[in-house]
Length: 316
Image 1 (cartoon, rainbow, N blue to C red):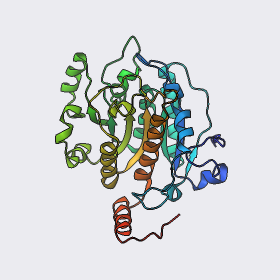
Image 2 (cartoon, one colour):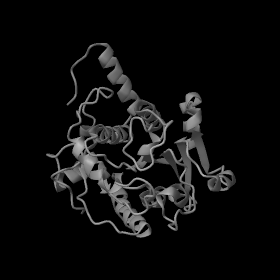
Image 3 (cartoon, rainbow, N blue to C red):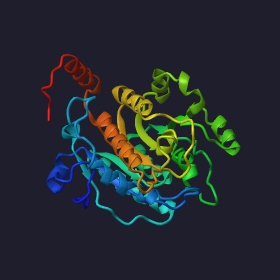
């Protein structure tokens, strides 16, 4: 049994403890790893800022026309010590994620830098077999290490691909090094990129097709969003997605595919810029609600009809 956060859990500070563990489908894992950042720092503070901001969210979601978290339940792990080396931290997270999956629950990891992602991915591949990572990011992260660290945040997707059961569909990439191109071209069957420069011509059905029939792990580097709306990250890059563009893709993926786990990484809060904290907490709630709402398509359609009819009898 994990130790659960009771003072500052995600969303609801009142519903926590061992009894609520049994009723909950989602387990939020604060994992503020910061070991290989190469520009701006502060990712170690990301989880705490997201958890605190989540207490300011309205739990009612007008898209679902209800408080969706009540349908799946959320618990948050208590903060714990993280291994200092990225490789050991990845192994640590792999073990934690495997325990969550073996309890038939959905892991959502709050980072922390992107180097943590392989740990969760390895556990998912071990549990489910072939998986595809839906990867939102400004950077391809296909280096075979960076600044002497093989498990660098700049090599996160390359390390995920060390497991042959893993494929990747990356969305929003607009920063890649020349050294990554040969690997990308040699692995075109396992890595598909939807480039940020082509955002205006993306078609969501094309993204769905690229994901194939595998189950989906969602890795969301917060710098996948445009730097004008989320400067609170180590390497903000212009030309990214807007919030609604990103959530629209995730919603459609969740309608068609099974999302088995997720992480939100590279959030580095800036003092007094709480809008970024709030946005990242909102994104976390949206991802959980899309991934864990059974029969999502019919649920959203029913909610839309209720709004159009002026039906204000809501489920709480």
